Length: 120
Length: 107
Image 1 (cartoon, each protein chain N blue to C red):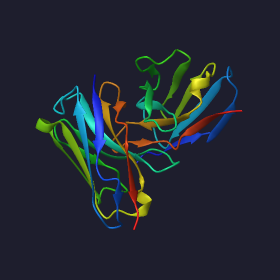
Image 2 (cartoon, rainbow over the protein chains, first blue to last red):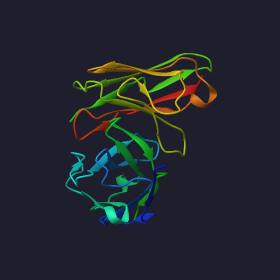
Image 3 (tube, chains in turn purple, brown):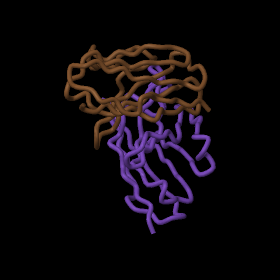
């Protein structure tokens, strides 16, 4: 059974850089039928897709945030890392990583999410 | 970038009633559309993929329909555990996106 677990800071100050790690198990990040995305959700608001990394290391980013985002993976460590620069209070949200299955074109398994607060 | 618009924002119904949720895409996404259910404090759960295929373990009262730009999620008879927020998501092209959500609440 595939699982994903997010980890990272709980509190950041404005202008700081956020680094989140998604540790996966039960599947390989080199599986061509799978990929991992980061998705966030501000309190009481809708889901917002941020970035995706494919098994061949190709990446895709949200158009509105791509200048601030970098996604990468370490297959040997089963980890996907997201960095977001110049954090602002509006970036306060629960950040999820999720397993994307190309057979379904959808996110089949989600991590539990990690809440990140940006405040001075 | 494709925009998904969900309606209504809130649906007030009673248990046993039928729920019909809409998702409209700003351009055709073929059948590359998924639906998720999210309950408070939980991560979203995949309900429907490829517009009409139920995910593993999803009850038959959930059904999806549509293609191109107009999609519907129907819950044939609401159970108490179905009161939640529902999101659609496309993967017609990258970047993908989610709709703004529909909250199904108890009337």
